[in-house]
Image (cartoon, rainbow, N blue to C red; front, side, top):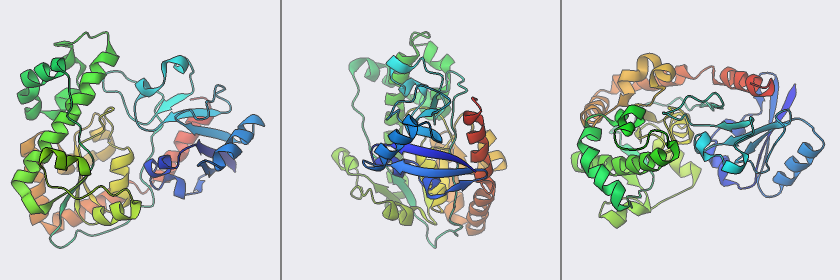
Length: 330
């Protein structure tokens, strides 16, 4: 049995990892959670005496020797790695960069999934904030491009699309626009759903009220989130940081027993297989059709929930293989 320990200073990172740290055993590995203000110091001691293998969230503490561990950036691509230690080859990210293939991806899969059934009269759930503040340059480009984006959301993940308007060699500049456009698209989708589904659409997040959109107050209690997700139709518009089917939000929905509807990501087909065309959408029409099908066909919803559960039965084995890869120096 080999020891792997997770190190992070702030407790909110525990929430980002969902059920991952609730499990101790992944095949031949024993996973120890050393996150939080106090345990974080124990992790530093283990690193100093070179005991076990460390996964340091957001490089706090920074690990420079890849034999000791990796720096893991949970909420983004490798572009989220601070420039002053991007030269290290043990930096890993959780989300894929749609414009550049990266090998240093540490994929966290949903585990300990609640096997649920669709609720009677299911609700459509979205939990999240909104930020549509943009500068003049971003506004001009958005007004020019938004109809094209509305027809095919996946166009934002294509480098060739951005090269028409921005310097193709400046990936970081493209990503600034990419994040802003994803936030603007999220806002437009929520407005559309509120108009189409009204009371059937449950929106959680204080920020929406600032835009005259009715919503429930923000609630960051994981138990509240799980109760809301379970047995309902739960939306994920993808991370603004990149394009990955499995990351903190989608894993949380799956683990809680929610029926995930997700905007199409660059790895959708690989992750979802035959489920891809049943739960993925790439425009407003797709999304509305999927929601109506699921709300009016209980048997279909039950089948998708069961298939989702079965799709991740071997998650622990997949995570063990991830551990193998990082410990054996990739």
